[in-house]
Image (cartoon, rainbow, N blue to C red; front, top):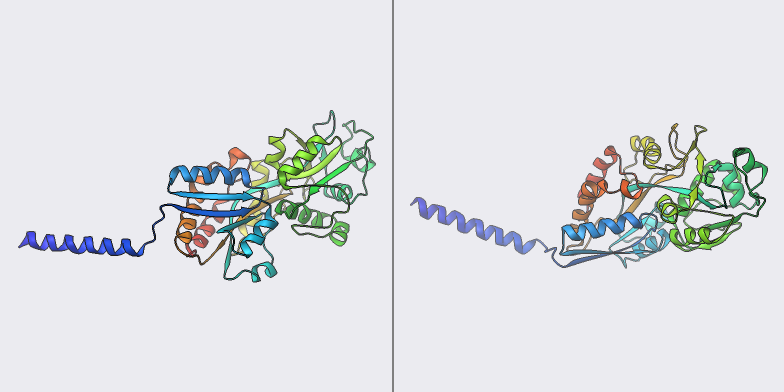
Length: 342
C-alpha cells in the first residue's frame, strides 16, 4: 500500500515538472542584440564574453555606435536593448512604445586628454575648458592656462579642439559639466548628446576622438578615461567644486557617486557632474542599459539573468578596466528594477 502511494506521488510530481517545463521558455540558443554607447564598450565587451562562457547557450551581440544611435535603435525596437551615457529625455521616453527602464551598470569619467610635446601634467578648471571649447582661448600659452600651470612650459602654439562627430553620451556628460560651470556655455551651446560645436574637429566614437588627439600635435579632446590610457595619452586634473584639482580614478569617481547614491531617483536618471566632495572627480557619470519592461519570448528572462549576473559577478571586473562599480545602496535598487522585467 505504501509503495503504491509513493509511486502515485512520483507520477504526479513528474507530471507537474513536465507541465512546468512546457510553459517555461527555453533559454538555449538565445541571442540578444544591443547597440549604443562607446563609453562602456570595453567593460560590456568583457561582460558579454564572460557571460557567454558561463552560459554557452546564450550569446549577446553589441554594436558600439554611440549613445545617440543606441537611443534611436532602442526607440525603433530594432535591438533588444540600448545603451547610453546620457539619460533619455521625457520626450524620447514618450516616443518608445511601452515602458522603458534605465539600468545603471557602472560609473566612469570623461577626461580632457591632450597632446603637447614634453607636457605630461596639466591642471584645468571648468571656466578654462569652456573657453577652449568656445574658441575664446586659442593658444596653449594663454594667460588663463599659464596661471593654472605656472610650473609647466606651455608652448605658444594654436590649440586644436577635438570633439565627437556622432550623438554621444560622453558628449552629454562633458557639456552637462560645462553647463554647470560656465553660464556662457549654457547660454550659447547648452547640453545634449549632440550640440553645435563652436570650433573643432569631429571624431567618431571615443576611439575616433582619441585617435585624432593622438595624431594631432597641440590638440585637446575628451574621452572616457580608459581610451586615454589605452592610447597612452596624457589627461588633465580638473578642479572640482571644492576647489581641488583631481585626476580621474576609481576612488575619485566613486566619491562623485556618493551624494547621488543617497538621493537616487527611482528611474535612475541622474547627473553627478560637478558633484560636491573634496575628492570627487567633477566629470563623472553613471552609464545605463536601456531595456523594455515587457519583452517577447525568452528575451525578458535572458535580460533578467544577465543583469543579475552583471550586478554580482560583473561588478568585480569593473575596476580592472578603470570603471567604478555601483554603490551598494544603488545595487539594491537595481535588483528591484530587474525583477520588474517581463
